[in-house]
Image 1 (spheres, rainbow, N blue to C red):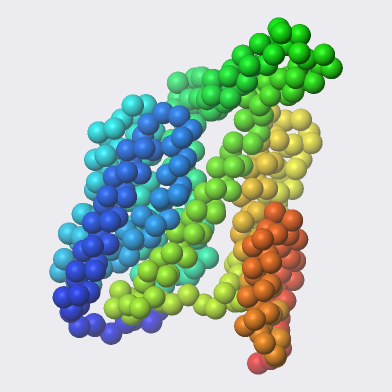
Image 2 (spheres, rainbow, N blue to C red; image 1 turned 180 degrees about the horizontal axis):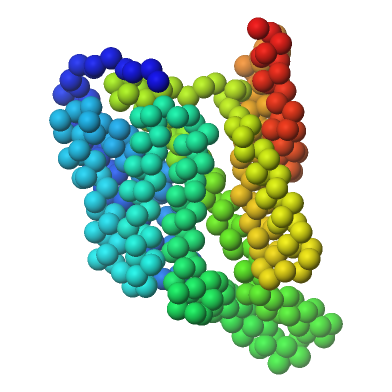
Length: 348
């Protein structure tokens, strides 16, 4: 593995900047730790803060070992999230531990992978997996340990926060005799089934959000470190058009998807929950690879390439919900047939 040459000590402006980032990461981590340790689904709001805070903390962690103050700054940026989670504890022990580890775990893993120059895809996968683990532990593990059920707290949240208020309004509407065509009663019956759907959808949504936010964290890390990667001892990411999932994961993905499909359609316990989880787990990686494939194809345009590229990606952003499945299938096709890799070999 290529070793970086010893770098000169950082200038004072650079030290001041990394100190500022450490302080910002500390405040953000404390906020995330405190909110995530509380009860209620509102804790998922920390997903808006997680990418920025974790990317900043990972950048600070990359300075450890490169500068004399690196370890101190790393501690400064990571410890407040642990302290805040413990201080704000209102749920069980497991949610508190998960909240305390949310930022430190993701930041340290990202810094370690990038210092070892192991690639962008592995960084996205590991950071996403750590966030999924934290979210699942925070939302579900306490219910499993207590015997109430993994999704009991989520089901209660939906019932108390959504179903019960709507039911009271609908009951009053029906009692006044205003529901002559039975429409409100029908809608109420549909709403009352929402808590029952939570086990089938919750894990999949946790996985999808974890993948989305984890990938965003890595991209922000690349942006924050763009001007001083060599000083930090990390490697620049490859062009987006070359991003791809490792070939070695193809067979495990196929086998896992087949197994989940069999479990769902065989009527096994939690079969559909596992099926939806697998779908959501691989949706974002294949979609991202599909976008990279689109970018690769755009590279063959000779005239006004930049303008066409901007228009295409803006259009994809505006129509994302409509083209998401198409992009996923493009990514899956590329994973199976490795078109870019074949063309590179042919051109050598």
